[in-house]
Figure 1 (tube, rainbow, N blue to C red):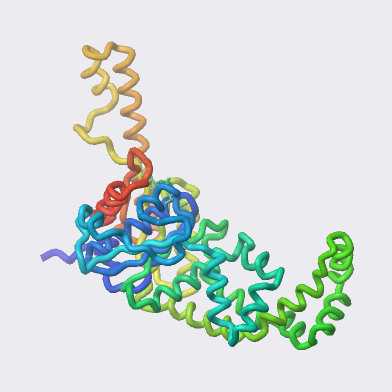
Figure 2 (figure 1 turned 45 degrees about the horizontal axis):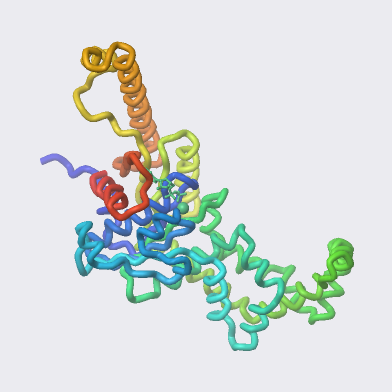
Amino acid sequence: MSAPGPVGLVARLDGARVVVCAGPGGVGKTTTAAAIGLALAGRGRRVAVVTIDPARRLADALGLGTLANDPERVAPDRLAALGVEPPGELWASMLDPQRTFDGLIAELSPDLATRERVLTNPLYRQISGAAGGSHEFTAVARLHDLVADERFDVVVLDTPPSRNALDFLDAPDRIAGFLEGRAVQALLGQGRTGIAARVARRGTGLALSALQRLTGVDVVRDLATFFEALGPLTAGFSARAVAVRAILRDDRTRFVVVSGPGPLPSAEARFFREHLRTVGMPFTGLIVNRVEAVPAGPERDGAAVAAGLSAVLGDALAAKVGRTWDEHRERAARDAEAVAELATAVGDPRPAVVAALDGEVFDLPALAAVRDQLLAG
Ligand SMILES: Nc1ncnc2c1ncn2[C@@H]1O[C@H](COP(=O)(O)OP(=O)(O)O)[C@@H](O)[C@H]1O
Ligand SMILES: [Mg+2]
């Protein structure tokens, strides 16, 4: 009897409580996260998929309205048409960083007054809504909430299209670290006027007061009141960072690296895999998406194809079809080689390979086609 071969990617996700899909932007992370959700629902699990910036049409296909921070259930009859039956369920949501952040402040505030002070602070909106960082931070905040939600067996998390695909791993630590840091703690220790004086004494004080004269906004005072308002939440932020770190390192958390066959995404995928190793987080498998499929039919080269067609199409057109055929085969061969190299580099002997579909993936049947390839891979 021969030794069993490596298990396919979806089977490796059995028993997972969290699946994080990570990798460079644009490779199909959102699409594969949704397809993994569908696959796991098909295995009888109650799945919540958190998508980040899904293409509008994919969001529509999943039945997500514009304000779908909370998971919405994909109708059982639409799932049944794709072969997903109870107890399997698929729920999908779109990450809304502002609402998630507001919810977190509300949850961590020891009392209503603190909460109002933070939420109504003029700097809060700008800081919490700042494009960078907030997606990373709120993605893990959302993960924390959904893991605790008993409606779901497993949460599949798409990750933000950040320049650094790894930012979200330590986002909670960064925020907690910042609030616990000496600078902020020193400011908090000063009392309101003390803070203003201290900020003003530093080099930035000059720039800030110039800004204040220009804009009429009292930046120093606003900063001071903001940090003062956040003070009571510091311990809560730290505890949350610890809880999130525990979730990310749990045995039932799986990291899937999504890549494309091109050199750039492959390089980023390798880098990501290395980083997981460095921070001691588990790597479960590789998905290579949008791979050129080998053309179906007999293994013929372009010249043979052209010869067979010239009687029907004429020489010129037949030669063109022959050339296209060859290009297609070359691309497929190049992609197959790239997949094999990447698989070796990241250490997944059986990566899931998803072919480039003819159209985009914006409806449930197309999503099911991606799922079927994940299951086959
Ligand atoms: N296997 C595939 N075949 C064809 N189109 C795909 C495939 N995977 C993803 N796409 C399309 O590529 C685009 C980017 O996919 P998306 O999942 O949004 O990427 P990311 O989340 O990594 O930025 C979308 O328009 C999606 O429909
Ligand atoms: Mg995306």
